Amino acid sequence: MTSTFRVLAAAFLIAVASLAGALYLGHERAGADESLFGQGGVATLDLHALLDNPRNADQRMLDSAFRQVEKAYYRPVRAQVLLNGEQHELVAYLRKHNVRDPAIPLAQANGDESHDINLLNQSLQLAETQYGKMTSNADLTQAAVRGMMNALGDPYTTYLSASEINSLEESLRGGDFGGIGVYIVQDPQTKRVLVEPIEGTPAFKAGIKTGDRIVAVDGHSVAGLKLDEVERLIRGRIGTVVNLSVLSHNARAARTVAVTRQQIYVPSVHAKYEGGFEYVRLADFGQTSYDEVRRALLAGKARGARGYILDLRNNGGGLLEAAVQISSLFIPQGTVVSTIDRAGNRETKGATHESIGVAPLAVLVNKYTASASEITAGAVQDYHVGVLIGTKTFGKGVVQSIYNLSDGGALKITTARYVTPLGRDIQHRGIEPDVTVSQPVEAPIIDTPKDLQLAAAKAYLRRNSP
Image (cartoon, rainbow, N blue to C red; front, side, top):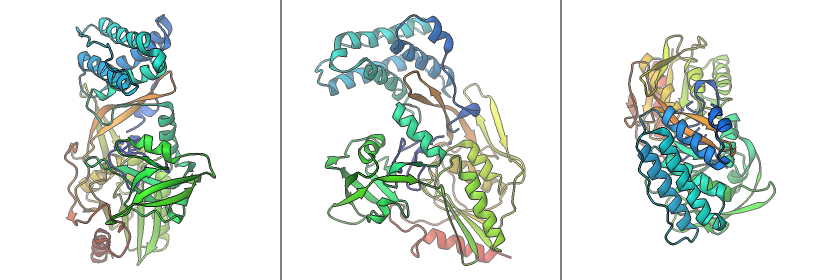
């Protein structure tokens, strides 16, 4: 689920390398979300199915995906839904590859696992036998798995290809890879692809502005494309040039910007000491985020800061563990978040007893503050260790886990929902700030003199600082 300018979950870092639009982005980043790695790591496949089943690798992968969804998804799953999803996606994929009327009939599940898995395999085998020469068995298998995931109607539960899972892992490690240096987000309603350049990167130096809309990449329109498809168009060999057609905020016509690709390292924190206050803007909750935030806050203490601002606006989330660690910088003890699985089992994650005593604290939030960001914002609000300023958050109260597949890809599955320390379920509800200050999120005004939310945070700190 990493980006200071993405939504969902989750959405995920693109420098350029996005998988989200939702986690997450969170990178997908709470998306990578346990939000990407539940239970302390990446789960494994059903080895019994892999070793004992004589069917081919494609069918075994399909079997494993079916079983994993039925076992791990945070809500009960009807087998018929998965069968319908497979058939729908196979037909759609074949039509996209010039098969006019694919003969893949709907199969009827009866609730018996062996029977229903056999039906899944029959549909895949039929597609491979009839149309494999027009495409590939591997592509058809991926389509079948993707169809099952999409049929759940959960934007955070999906199949990730090998390249997508590699991009996700890159973002969670801190973002050290080739690209042009932009965060990317797809508006969930208009489907427009918007960017925010990272200061000092090729995109920033080329004149890309926060809120610019990507219209085309090297002449290829991005209309109707998913974020990972846009990513693949933008990324390329270091030293090569990519031509972006971009439409700036309030501009009437697009312009073309040539950007030379470079190796990009993206820290998750931007911090500065200004006016007696330590300002910390967090882009995502990755593997390095806790250390970066802690260093910035301690630097503020060393300078004698009279107050602290944690900016979680446009932060689509990331790792659940990072959210717990960062929350623990402000919360001395007690529950930070509780996750609840399909069976109602509750796992409580408490503060790590690493509070560093930074106060007063203002936390900036907006409608793109999601997932892991909401865990931290909710904990701060429930314990009254700071005030939330801005607008209502996104409302992503579920966490995901990653399950590797034999093709190098993976399933990202919603495995639990979470509640704040006071038991608030924020899924589709979001978190209301303590102080509401509205302002556009698309315009390039964050951390500028026009930033009304930041101004409100500073005013609060001035009133409450010692």
